Image (cartoon, rainbow, N blue to C red; front, side, top):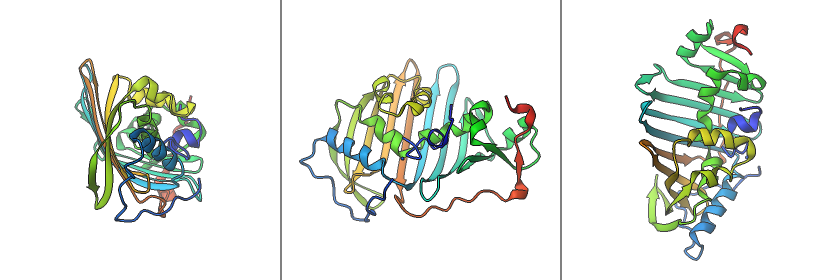
Amino acid sequence: MLKRRNSLATAAAGAALIAAAVAGCGTNAQPIQVNLAASEVLAQAAQKTAEVTSYTVDAVANVTHPQEGNGKVQGRMLYQSKPQLAVDLTLDTVDMGGRNLPGGVRAILQDDTVYVKVEALKELLGATKPWIKVPLAEVGNQGQVNQYLGQIQQFDLASVTKLVTASKDVKQAGTESVNGEDTTHYSGTFPVDAAVTQLPADKQEQARTNLAELKDVKFDVWVAGDSLPRKLTLNGSKEGATLDATLLFKNFNEPVNVEVPPADQVGELPKSTVN
């Protein structure tokens, strides 16, 4: 359950999706020093991401399942922990098992309130306004709302970086440019069970749900000279189920503009749906 702001942002706010500022990123960052072992680089990246106070991530995840069919989630998340917690998640594509959500999903978290905009959810709950406001304390009791907010962890910088530190076989795979920045490429695998235990306790349940059908996950991560990842890919499979995800991170510690929807566009969660 997402019971408080840390769980909901699932980041340093937070999150392993979390707070002093890190030095700004230059566009020509130098590759990580080659004298550092690959595992040390991952540990250093995990430490650095835990200090990041804001970032933007673009992500796409493709999944297959022998019973539930194919699916795709694609979107962007803006995150900040200071001066106040704020998350703006936009999922342009939400397609699971051949069923998609026209118009996608939008979720905004600010302090102790979540605003959700999903046309299908609006109809299901009988809401009369485009946006539904849910106090954070009630999110865990709202299955339909919680389902969409669970996507936040999959976009979370600190969570996904922490997962890869469970790798026992990571190695350097060269240097590459990612969005115009010099990075060092690292590749390896991690066992899901061991990786999930690297996360804070309040984030492990959601992570297990996201990775439930997988055993070992192959990853590639591109780390810039400031020890922060610019790109991360995850690939895994088990008994016919597969995951193929790519996340691109940028705008570390830059100002984030997250605005709640206009009051006249926001309705309360219908009381009949509250458990």
